[in-house]
Image 1 (tube, rainbow, N blue to C red):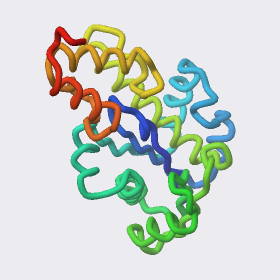
Image 2 (image 1 turned 180 degrees about the vertical axis):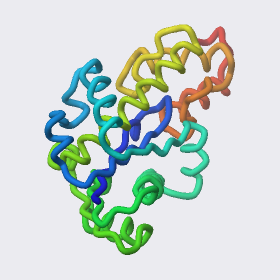
Image 3 (image 1 turned 60 degrees about the vertical axis):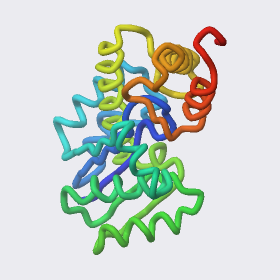
Length: 212
């Protein structure tokens, strides 16, 4: 049995960080589906592949809410947060080998640290593993679809366009900025440890609404 592990939402300012893991005896069922890096698939194709993947192989997700990420970032780096989530995900089923999409610049170091948390398992951590290993591509699809569905729920909760949740998305940043202007605090599901949000909160604290 081998495992692929990847994340979705690492750099987002709003919404969860989701780690997906897929467990398979061989890549054959995944290659027959045609899995590839989730970022290269349309939302509709990702959804269809998600249903096929979860029907034919083992899988799991580990989720950290925005509040969870903020709390963990008080004592560890984002790479360490992700490392521990990877370890939790790939430990949920026995696997002799784990392929991980490496978030660290140092692949060897990340592999060594992940291996220490999952003893007895061979770890292969590579940049762009989601574009190289079918089992990691499948994990990226599971993580991405899970996060997208959670973002849909958050969107419905606010009843407005909150964008993708990433700081490069002006819909997301405009929504957060307006909420902070009007309420003096960040909305739910926003990572207050992210620098753009810290700056907005600091500016709001030192100004009146009429100054905006």
